[in-house]
Image (tube, rainbow, N blue to C red):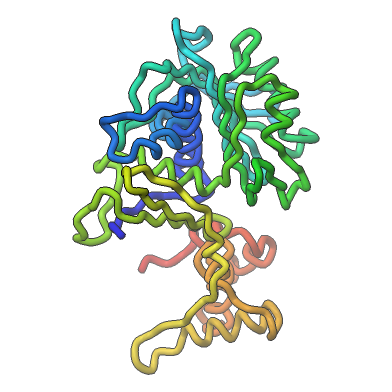
Length: 344
């Protein structure tokens, strides 16, 4: 595995990578095309939904923001994007988390090539983020976006690829946090979308990685990149997301979901260093003595809180009272720990 680092967490960069993977998939699916210039053509097919979104997301903070009521949605406007260029087809890309859903409408020309390590083709027409709590279903969110908010009259996407925070089976996904059941086939029929493909949100992250140029990654080791070699994608957010990509004989990559974050936490340490063993024992007590401790309990946002509580228990004299009080009031807010951590 080549050592390459990318922020795949639940916020900004990670959501952008997921969106990029969705759009790359959508752009390729609308024509079922392949690109000879790409060492992983099918990968392109699954990444067209993602490419441009990565760069757009990087610039988002400098764009003008508007609001249709703070409780309803956040809108990112881009200049001169209300009209569809001649020959362009509408592609809907979405990053649907447990709290918010971000929808992006693109115009993509079937003739634009998909090239590895480059943003997927297409022009962003509108991007809006909605709070899930304000809606009864994902279908309602998409309906409002297409009929009221996207800025395109009678918008009917040719393809929609939706990255969902859940397990996808038979193009159906159930949101654990919301108890929403989403069916791609039902969305096709009810919203008049040509093709709706549901994918796991971290699968979208994996496909989005394939659009990154060499200048957008940080090398972790001296391994020489090998086209066609397996690729692992790991991202610590609220939990620990994982997926992996493998290439077939033609060089086409396929991204597979994984629940590797739920694997056992294996303590390690040099010689007599047993602090991680102590951490494991502490967590077993915290989560019930018979409860298994997964790596996600340690390497994640909630893991930061777990590690802090262990260190506070082990070194009570080093606890900052004000910080500890904030933590006790919000025990799952890793930001409190990160913002007040000592250097080193």
